[in-house]
Length: 362
Image (cartoon, rainbow, N blue to C red):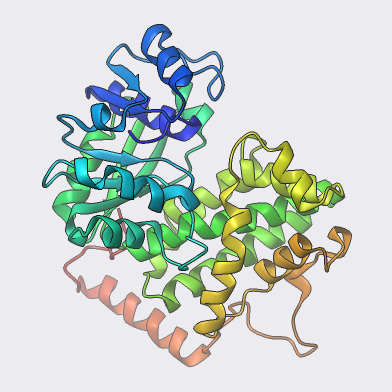
């Protein structure tokens, strides 16, 4: 496990509780020493006892020795440098799993794309994990689930088996694009929810933004090759609900501070950990504009971050033309009706070999 923050530590516990022996790499020697000697990581998961099958080191080489699977849980903007450092030591043929939910600002690449290019890996060796996974709740062994995605179903299943225990269940899919973008985009919507919460708006406003946010997420992911069903699953809707409604969410917390009137640099200074949504807004908007995807919620979050929109004026669910439009951003009634009819016929006559399990399904 490369990374010893709250998420890396919580996921290391998931793996250990599933029967694995886990070695964590911590950038700071004192963090590694505490995990190794006291089986705790008090800075990031206070009050949590870690399994004795977890150890830690500040030596990257030592952490990789004998590894059968590699998990990455570092801030997305530091991933490339960390990969360059570990590349000469990477054991051959092992799966590499991204636990990160961000976009690289300098390249607009997803984390799996950065992994593939830096490590020169076949995409079948790469997996991503995502879902409604707040680190502290998982560390407290509160039941939840995630989805592991890889273009290789075998790789996804291998990782999912390792990341399953009595309180944590991993499903699988082969839609890496949809799974990764779901994990990234829900952070941006969570920032918006935090902003309106900080301003003092109520549940109607938040419910409207969450619902319209899911539309933006789906349209964006589909425009980039993702499957719409993935965005209604654990990596999309599930993660969106958890991140938007929980005070444990870093992105929600960052948004709330913005809504209370703090400037972006003040929010960053107050945050103890990285809120990935803040760094992902600009690259996501660049990708959206390149594909002609309309994202009014993300646009207004960007305006708040740059100081060009007062948080109390945020109302992205109202930014439409005067003429009423369809509830979907891209609303083709005939195509949607025909699609629904085809789905109904398939169900009625038992057509389709996936039995309802599309590329985004579990």
